[in-house]
Length: 305
Length: 274
Image 1 (tube, rainbow over the protein chains, first blue to last red):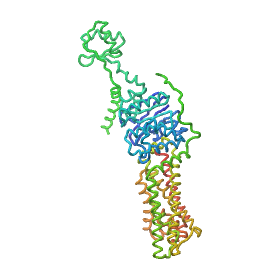
Image 2: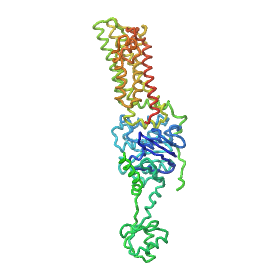
Image 3: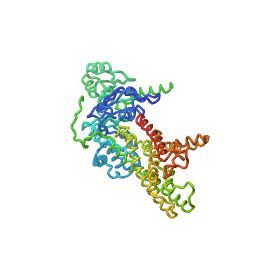
Image 4: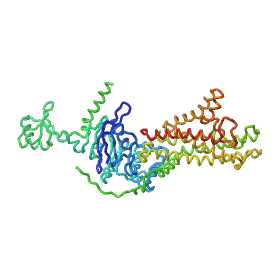
């Protein structure tokens, strides 16, 4: 469980995170979404105590992270896969982390196995591809078998197989009852992975809702129709609990009913349809629509300065 | 979807018997320092330079004869004090600056968020490794140098007054030099910057001080960090320059500078964003 209350971080005159409050719950994969520069990494750094909040607070399992009893058993984090000493072997890297929290050596071998780095464990991490570095970072996060896992853009640099692997890993970690908090600027990634979304733009909270609700919100139940008999269709749709609006040209958009329902409705009332298509807006588009405001805001303030 | 199903999982890692702190972090830092090549290269250079200086210095004395300020212990140990220090500051700085240059500091603090523990563990580990190596170096340089001097019977032994002190303090001063660099590294967070700052402090300040009127310089010299003030440390006899403190005195002065720098470094390490 991660709880942020009024979390604010100011760098000079730039407000990176602005009065952010949210709760990340166990048992779910919570996606942390926002365009690049939205403040995702800064927020995660504050959760880990790397950065001190200008105002507000954030706790992990009820306490500031720095006060946790055994940090590695509480939180496993992968912020930056390249944040390792390249001259150290993968094994020694994991060992030196494990030793701080009295985690037995065999666990180091275990996590190397989990991420599939057995063949290169003795090699210096300098020569690792980004994908291998990501796996090493994930191994480090898993060392303490923590209740809370935090990944910052974990699929960056991974091939499709790696992306699939990490998606399944996050899902299984959440299924074990852990809190999984994963950031991404790619909506499409979250569509298949996350249960819950926290969306930020320009450091402020834009949305905090289940994924299903995010896509459903005025999107999935929209249907585009063309009919010469729009008066009667409007009456039928309204009677069935939907709403209808006139788009540009001849197209009508029906909300609150699925495409199938609209088709059946038209047949029942003997209304001729020329065109019927679900206007399903993807998570990506919903995300763009939501964050467009924060991007515009950025452009406007930029122009003023 | 109001409540998520939470299963009780079996822990893959045993619970911590006590709150992780200094002992584990010391082990971790020892693993860190011994698992990168830069440590071995710098220590090898330190040992080689210190002993090579002793060999050359003593061989020169053995062939050219002794001057009025000759001190047999000093002939063996000057290398470690004058040249070894320049090498050990690199390691002292790297121990902490490499964490910043590689980004490792974020990982280190994510597993050990108690910053004072991490800072202390790093300093202690570095000091222990360096003191061990420099003590060995000190004795080797001493015995090798004295063996060369013994051909002309210029040599001394550890049992002579002040000789053991000179051997031990020469090793200690190298370690303190390294800690000096560690403190600077914590403040500046950049390897080249930290090393430049240290060398500037140790060499430039005494050099600039020489521009002062002679009487002032004589009063000030004993308080300066490095330069001629380090000379008594490698000698078994009192300093030739009457304005300097004794070996212990100069060691205390230098260590105080290091302590101040370490304290400032600690304060910033704990307070600043990583």
